[in-house]
Length: 357
Image 1 (cartoon, one colour):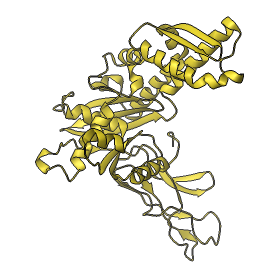
Image 2 (cartoon, rainbow, N blue to C red):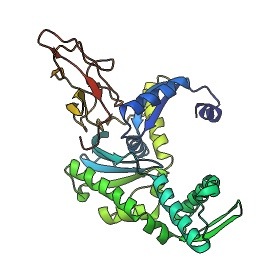
Image 3 (cartoon, rainbow, N blue to C red):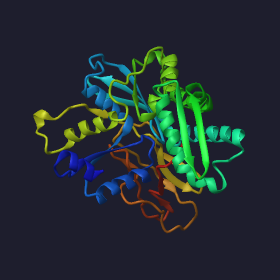
């Protein structure tokens, strides 16, 4: 990616803002930072993808930012994850109110359901199982054909699937209604996450002024229909959903970079929140929360906990100040030394806790 960017810019790329799904765990964020460093990049910030989408819309003036207290929802449905973000506009600033999502729900799940459906139709028609035995080798080609058909169904009512490999002749027509039927459970799961986000922010659908779409899977017509039915208005997709996140990250990079002079820096202030609860593991299966999820960042927590057993020499932990969280959402933990009262400040830090924690 770095070499592609340098080729397009015809220049050396040194600094970067990297976007990640809002529900990325701390370990995933650290791995992303390390990947950036190994690529020779100075990572200015890790930015949550739905937040970047909101920044792009505000920067391009696609949203009226003059109304204080206006609530915006970002619905970011990509290939592997779903993020739902609720933001309040306050004098041009973006105040993140609630983050909800699913790290295992995205376009690949729609693909998998359609693959199974097409394979079963072919088996019933010909008796040939294209997903089993020697035919397993054709799976990559089958998935490619299914993805192409899914993209076609975003703009047309019918798509043809034609695949001939290893003496298997798969020729089917898929209606959009069929695609929507086999994936209806997943679509409803997406809307359930929207409802949970609203309840967590103590809002209703009437409190949301605009719904912003991000991620390639938001091109699916059924997604548009469900969001429009729920909110009573069509969602915004005037900025290309595949590009809006990168657009927002570029705006943020220009703001953070020293290469852009001050008067030319775009200013879209963002107050983010921690998407997951962070705490220490006191004993196996027992966690004490230091920083609750959806806490404004930067945040810092302190907690005094007892060792799990007497005369322990210390507590396992990660380097850094206990429970401190930076604006990028990363978290670090540390430990103190047990004293005569066998108490310690610290413990193993959990940043990968379930959404419900």
